[in-house]
Structures are given as C-alpha cells and as structure tokens.
Image (cartoon, rainbow, N blue to C red; front, side, top):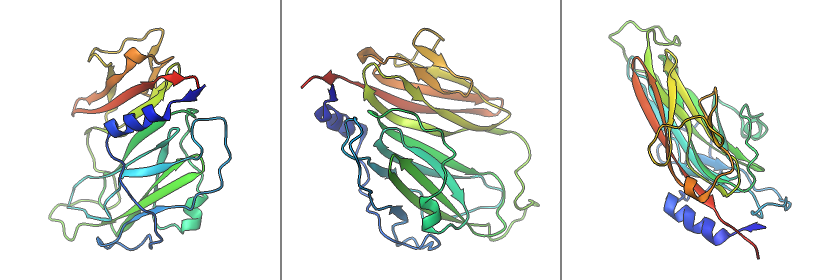
Length: 269
C-alpha cells in the first residue's frame, strides 16, 4: 500500500502555502532586520525506509522575527511554525551556540512514530521576566534527517519606571497561553493521531477538547484526552476529518488553538 501523493499535494494546498525560506549561512548573532534569519542544514543522503516519502522534508511556514525589543514589565511571545514529513519537533535554545552544536543538539522532545504523516506544528517561547541583557533565542526544528533553525535577538527594556527585578519571573497568576500545538495533521486512515496542547499558565490550566462537530470530546474507544492535555485519536476514519479545538482555562482567562485533521485514503497501485 502506498499513499496517494496527489491527494497529499491537494491537501497541502488547502492547508496554505509553505513559506519559501531558503537556507543560507548567516551569523546567528546578527540581529539586522535586513537578513533572512533562518538556516537549513545540507540534506543528507536518504535511504528509502518503506514510507511514502523518498526523503525527509521540513520548511518554515512562519519564521520568528530577527529581533524584538522588550518593554518594561512586558511578557514576550516568540512564535515559530513549520511543516514537514512525519511529525516535526520544535525546541528552543537560549543563548549563542555554534551551528555545529545546534546540528548535534540532543532533542528533549519525544518524537511521535508517524512515518506517513504530514504535519504543521506551532511553538511559542514565553519570556515572562525582564532581561538584563540582549539574548538570542533559537527555534530548532527537526524531522528525520532534516534540521532547520531561526534565531531572534531580544533586547532588554531601555528604561523602566517600575521596580522590576531582572531575570526573575513576574509574580502573580498568569492567564493560559498555548505554547505547543499542531495547525494541521494529515495521515493515513487507520493511523493513530496524537494532537498536542502544551500550555503555559499559573495556576495550572484545565484542558478541554472539542471535536470536528464542536462537541466536547468524551473519553471513549477511539478518543482519549491524556494527562498531558494531548488528544489521542485512534484508528482515524474519513468522518474524523475536520477542526479540533483545544481550550485551556484558569482563573485568569483562557486560550484556544485549532488543529485540522485530514485522513488520507490509501490507494493500491
């Protein structure tokens, strides 16, 4: 059995265009707005691994800004989005690292085994304290043999009329912010799909999922909300296609994130 790649291409068009970000060697510490701050490693020779893709692929759909200026007492959100084969993982590196070290960086993300998937993932890095000096934050994405990354230099507030202790987390409660989710998830019918919903909140947020009919997901034979807040859909079927919403709520407010699930029909050549 083999995935109908024409269907995949059509689905990708429905999901939106992939940003045409070309990798080039730029200094990670250069914070000029005039440069492309994304980098893509050279592709390695890929062996066919009994899956629908001849090689791993990964592209940014939204690169982080090259630089940001922090305002006094403000929380900063740095957004990074990418799409690729299988299930790409995103992690953030704080500080300057040589390119060779980023290439060899051990991922702290547990990779999901989904060789036939095409996924668009979104990650948000939260800075909820005042910086004492300029700092570089690098979004590192991986899938299979592919690694891409882009950096943002955040400059501290020029002056502050408030008494805020630098490098110390802001006190008090914080409304939920969903920091890790998938925008789209395409996979073969019969696959198990795991939809993440990672949240930054204080106090801890309660997670609720809504299905493609905008009904609250109830634990059942094929649907399960895990203790992590992620939603597991087992043995996906054509009728599972649609938008799934994660709602994170605490006493300070709420945040939502949508994931579009697209089951792909298997064709027999």
